[in-house]
Image (cartoon, rainbow, N blue to C red; front, side, top):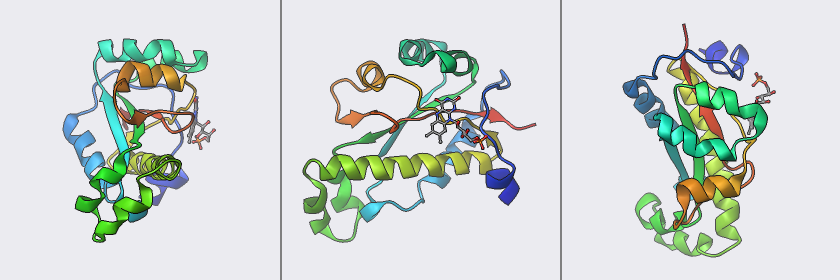
Length: 171
Ligand SMILES: Cc1cc2nc3c(=O)[nH]c(=O)nc-3n(C[C@H](O)[C@H](O)[C@H](O)COP(=O)(O)O)c2cc1C
């Protein structure tokens, strides 16, 4: 298992064209959610793109080296974070005062970025643990992704916050 999740595991850019079973994805997501975050804030918001249409929406934001592999991958996950994650703290954390620790900029952005990125890392490990390979990417235009997928929300995909993960079923 250590080899599968870390030692032998590599980033991948070419993938089988068979779909990732939803049950496997749910298994990985249910694992990653247990990873620790500041005050159990869990700010990551993950958008899983299965359809060709959703992938086309992403295309204009992609850096040139990342276009082909992203379009070919059977699954793309956009990892973003909610800058208003603190609104959920009364439900997620045992100390109700925690909302007042994070409900202002720049603390909200810094902690959202930090913990959202951590959750992205937990997702890579979880995907590998259930037998999926992935390739993290930050080569894209964040403002374009925000506009295309998160307009009108407090969810942000700024530089290196957001990674796309391209998963394939390991043979
Ligand atoms: C946050 C992050 C962003 C990355 N961005 C890209 C990218 O835009 N395009 C790409 O081809 N690889 C990208 N990579 C993959 C790295 O280049 C790769 O992990 C590194 O070279 C080590 O290789 P390995 O993961 O196979 O050990 C990224 C990796 C991480 C963790």
